[in-house]
Length: 571
Image 1 (cartoon, rainbow, N blue to C red):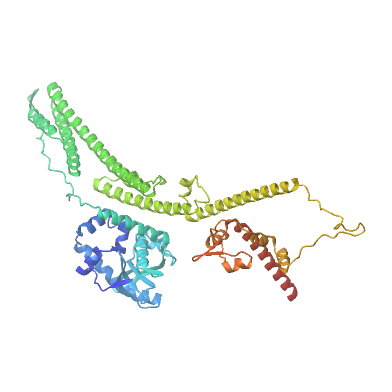
Image 2: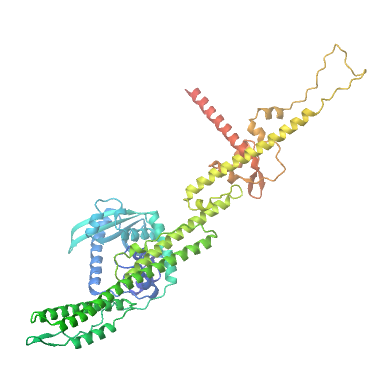
C-alpha cells in the first residue's frame, strides 16, 4: 500500500479523491448507501461538481471527528498497539483509515452509535451482521491495506464522557471483495461513457389563475343576480389552456395543481347552488347553468387526473424498457466476445426497484443502479464461461462435449470433476479398443500359424540316429537378463515391450494430472518406463499409461506388504 500525507477536507485531499476509487464511495457505487445514490456519485466524479456541505452537515462531521479521536485510545488498548490515521492507495483503489497499526495488519473504523448499530452489534462477534454499507467500506480498506482485520467501534459521548460503546471485528469476505472489484470495473465503464444531464430545478407548480368567485343571489321572489356567464367564460378559457401532453416533472406538477383548481371550481359551484336553493324553491335556469359548468369542471378534472396517471405510467414503462434493452445489448455483446451464445438469462428487477416511487429522477437512479448490478453479474458470468471454455478446448482432442452450452455454466470445481470423469472414460474406451485390436491380431496370427503344416525332419541313412537312441531336442540358451525379465511383474514386461513406431506424445504433467498426484521421470524409470526427452519435456507413449497405472498398483501393494512384515517383526 502506498501512503499519502493528506489532510481530510484539504484541496489536495479532494483532488486525490477525484482520481481514485475511494472506500467511502464504494457503498454508493454498489447502491447501498443511504446518503448518496450511484447516479450522484457518477455525476460528481465525471464533472467534479461536489454538493456543497451545509453548516449543519459540517458540524455533524466535526463532531464525528472529535469523538473518533476520543475513541482511538480505547481502540489502541483493545488492539494492544498504537493507531495512526492514514490515507492509502493500491493502484486505482483508495481508502482513508481512522487508524492503522504500524505493521498495517490491523485497522480501526469508528462510527457514532445509533439504534441501527445497536441492533446489529448484539455481541462482539464478526462484523458480518453490520449494515452492508459499513461492510463494503471496510472490505475495500482491507483490500487496499492488506490488513487481516478491522476493529469496528461505535460510541456515544456526553462531552468527553463516554456513555456507551459497542465493538466487533470485521474479517475479509472474498465474495464481497469480488463484488466490489467487479462493481468498480463496471462503474469505470459507465464513467467513461457518462454524459451529464441537463440540470433541472425541482418542479414547483406554476401559479394558477384563480377563477372568479361564483355569486348567485335571489332578488325578490324569483329574480336572480349572478355572474355565471363571467365564471363560465373564465372556466372555459382555463380548460383550453390545460397541457394535455406533459413531458417533464414540471408539467406533471402543473397538472396536479390544475386538478386542485378544478376541484375548487366544482366545490364553489356546489356551494353557490346550495345557497341559491336556500333562497327559492325553483330556479330551473340557474340550476341547469350551474350543472353545466360543474360538469365541465368535473369532466376536465377527471381527464387531467387520468392523463397524469397514464403519462407517469408511460414514463415508468419507458425507463424500464430502455434499461431492459440496454441489458439485452450488453448480454449480446458478451456472447459476441465468447463466440458462442452461451450466456444465460440475466434477471434484473427493474419494476421492483421503482415500486412506490413517484419522482421520475428517483426512478431513473434506481433503475440505473439495478442495471449496473445486472451488468456486473453478466460480466462475471461471461468470465466464468470463457475460463470454462478454455478448459474444454484443452482436452478437446480426447473428448467431445456435445453439452458444452450447459457445462460452461458450471462452477470451476464441478466442471473439473466432469472433465476428469469423461477423460478417464475416454481413456478406458481407447484402451479397450487397443486391447481388442491386439487380441484380434494375436488371434489372427495364431490362426495363421495353426494353418501351416508342421515341418518334418529330413533323415538320411548317414544322419539318422539308431533306433535305440533317444532324440533330445536342442535347448535354447537362457541368459541372466531373460531370467530377470521373467521375474518382473507383468505390467513392467508389457511396458518394456517394443512400442509402435510412433513418436511419444504423453507428457509427464498429463500423467500426473490424470493420476491426481505428481510423479517424476526417475520414479517411472524405476518401474521400467523410460521417458523420451524432447527439449525440456519428458514424453511417453499413450499406450504406456495403463501399464504405468498397474505398475503403480503393484508397487503400492509391495510397499504395504513390506510395512506389514516390518511391523510383525517389531512386534
